[in-house]
Amino acid sequence: MKPTTSPKTYRVKSFGCQMNVYDGERMAEMLGERGIVPAPEGEDADLVVLNTCHIREKAAEKVYSDIGRISKAGTEAGKQPLIAVAGCVAQAEGEEIMKRSPAVSMVVGPQAYHRLPEMLDKAVKGERATDTDMPAIAKFAALPERRRTAPASFLTVQEGCDKFCTYCVVPYTRGAEISRPYSDLVTEAKNLVDAGAKEITLLGQNVSAWSGENDKGHPVGLAGLIRDLAKVDGLARIRYTTSHPADMDDDLIAAHGEIDKLMPFLHLPVQAGSDRVLKAMNRSHTAESYLRLLEAFRAARPDLALSGDFIVGFPGETDAEFEETLALVDEVGYAQAFSFKYSPRPGTPAATMDGQVPKEVMDERLQRLQAALNRDQLAFNKNTVGRTCEVLVERKGKHPGQWLGKSPWLQSVWFEGGAQIGDLVQVDLVEAGPNSLAGKLREAVAA
Image (cartoon, rainbow, N blue to C red; front, side):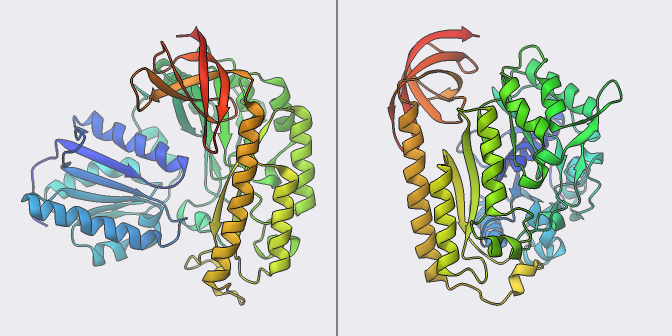
């Protein structure tokens, strides 16, 4: 690489989960501390950060495709941007990215992105740098304070996973489970509220495994943290994701019925409805134990909206076992859910299992599963028509005077009238579609 001038503009492109969104925001804040500003819409940036996700199919190939596209655009424009690859693909691919893509100047894993500024200094001098060290907690102390944020913001409280599901790369790309200190989280939550947040979603690869000691030195779990964050003035809403059924305790169940600020929404992945498949996945629950857990949550909060994750075509899955997944979906009635075809991840046990399911079989199963999930999502949305609820205004709609926000059940709601981003407004839900609802504005209840 040749030396270059320090970048004046940046663009961070985040893929995948909400934790990547959080990480992308924090990298943007670090760059902002150095006086680098977001590139105007439609203009090329001097620095492009690809904040990658390794969960989706062909994740690495898509990263290389993006790198090629950015490099080609730079050649045509006569100015090559600096390219940084961050996130889980960076962690998994590391030196391979540097070998295959000479246009990349920086590769940084999800636990080392706090070192991005010093890596940038090297890149400006013409040096290429890779950092995939995994000191999970160290990065948070190096990040700048939150200054401006969206009305609905993310707060990472826990990273890593110890469950080692046989299909999953997270333990290898994010490391072992580790919880951020209680005091750091309360401080960051207060800073987020001061910076404009009305809603905070607590994030973790296994967020329900968070644990720590409160300001009195008493051990607390996620429910205890939520109870204390609910006392923060100006914070109106709390959510959390993603959880594992093995770490959902009675205190967290009770919190859903006792804390008004904890929204009536639960994302709890099940992955499959067959006990044999769940065992092969190294999931520690059965279909029955999962359903009983949902019953307990619904008993605590009857209006709870449920969300889940599903994988179809896991190695060895039979037609009858897939039918068990459909039966579970029918019994639960999800408000929303995410579903994927199984795709092997190098280094995971499932990648070398016998009984890999043909693509055409997975395609057919996914279509049937998504048809059932879409049916239930539309039914849930229709069942909320006629209710009046609080909507947090997050952005402007496509048309003048139109606003978009989220209901307590994490539905997208659009309405017209006098409002501002960040307002909490009372909205009558008047019409439901598969992915959003139309509302009629009543009155603002908070500025």
